[in-house]
Image 1: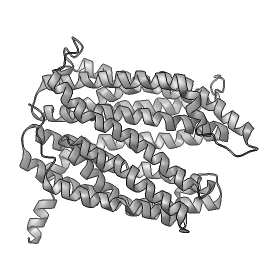
Image 2 (image 1 turned 90 degrees about the vertical axis):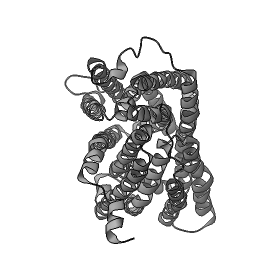
Image 3 (image 1 turned 135 degrees about the vertical axis):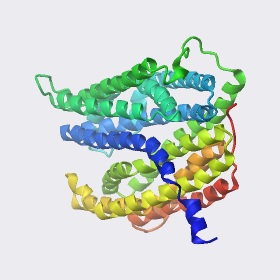
Length: 465
């Protein structure tokens, strides 16, 4: 194969990249702003006190499981939404939208019940402190309970926003969810300043203020997405008659449940796997925990490109598969993976250069700053690995092979990555940076597996009709 053939296979026309950016950029901007504000939010709460910051972090860890379940719930039906969009089947899109609303209602109701009834016990799982720290533990527990009591009110609007937002993105209407997200984070940040610290005559509410700000921001985001969708029914015809009844063909409901359940399980197990990894690393000392927290926040900021491209791959390939354009979908998959790799190589190099400067933002020890810099550089060097495995995951998922993605993602995390971390931490004398690096490199196995599955074309399936 000569150079021109390789170039033709890997690089698309200008119109191809215009299409990618039109879908990916709004998602990238929304995620980028959200992660940036999350970092600022964390710093603002941290200025109130260590116990307050710890309490908020514990509750956010619990709510992350809920959020990932919601993502998994809408993503299963979203596979069908993208394909129905490609097939120009408006009624099919309407069915998937109804299904998403039913699923998120069930998840939100169960989650609120669990947090309300067992929130205290769940919080205490994270408060296994040393003797002599009882006072700090109890104060952290109290702050966490205050924060959780308010945050429960914000779970329903978050779920509804995801059902509407996912449907809009799957039909390539990515700007509105982005605008809603931007408005939401601006409201959140502004109210944080007023409510946490007590500005403009408002009493200082601490963690309660942070929770109230977040809840209000979520209702604002929901209002923007819902109102726009219902007032632009000519542009989004799926919403016409969407609430007239909740009828969904039984065969389609079964298909969506079959494809969606592995995604919900995947997100749940994956979040548990991440928690297990952090617990293993924490054995090497509190400095490691602090450094990993810093590196994770920075990594989230720089990983928005990977996440956005994953969503773009689902939408673009799903539309081609739904239209029955199998060869075009296969051709696009190669170009999309190559473009994502180039994007992440550039991002990774930039992050390696900037790595020493980010920890300076934090008021912490030199040891933690040094470890954080090393962790950030490991993340930066491994970005092409993350990019490739993410592209493979979303490519396979676009064809409805959700059980395979379940094995590929969370099962791999639980039976390979976590045991690797446990063995290296407990049975070797390797320093923690090398342990962290080796655990990241384990994902090369996923890259090899993903390459062969994508190349074989097991994902080339038309689900829409």
